[in-house]
Length: 341
Image (cartoon, rainbow, N blue to C red; front, side, top):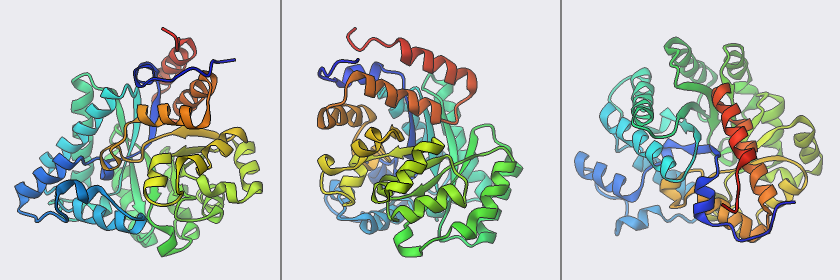
């Protein structure tokens, strides 16, 4: 059995791992937002600039999100942001990342959807060429979309056949728009048939019913968040039985008011129940937290042994959309990792 010794940030940076719940939309750091606002003549949302990154709840966060994502105007600015995210992942020792982007938010981008996706992918490709870890892209539809609009996003993805684009995602505040699984099920069916990965935000702004819809209607094997599954013991059993992955972001959930503290966050309950959980930041820029911070704090708060931490890292790679040769390499490295060296 692994030890319960102190987990350091340096140890976690050395540990091979993937991050699966990370948004380019949340990839801005304060300096990025200020620079782009100045370049494009946009007034800051709040003063001082750091105050723009403090929110009381999910809706206030989404309001800020709409503002900050209106800042990038051209392909060069978008590519520079995706490059920065990939570089930041390397500094945290993240071996592979599945990055999400929601085009509906980037309202001032001067070009069609295919140019926007290509710009994001260009920054990721350039970063990998420069020695930063591989980052692949999941394109998100919004729960505000009509079915026809969602099909149009998928049409663009399939027409591009971009090697950097690996999955279709869905996000948005379910508390505002309600249950949308029936509306988007045909879109996700097409995506699966075309060989794209499938993922869905659920069980954050929605309760367990959102997770049920994600796994039964959208047929996803990966749920982003999913933490409110604990409110339905039958659902937790189903997630364990089916081997559904939950890409959990504890600090994001606390910061946005879903839970009052890490201590009462249900990630420990899910892990103890045998759910296939991964640790993630949601948006390291917005939330001013790194993946190594998440691992270190979780191991301290929940008393996790190195065996549990190794399992979390292993699960992150197993759940990822990374190429199979890289998956095998990373899993072998995780199994061989010495926490005491």
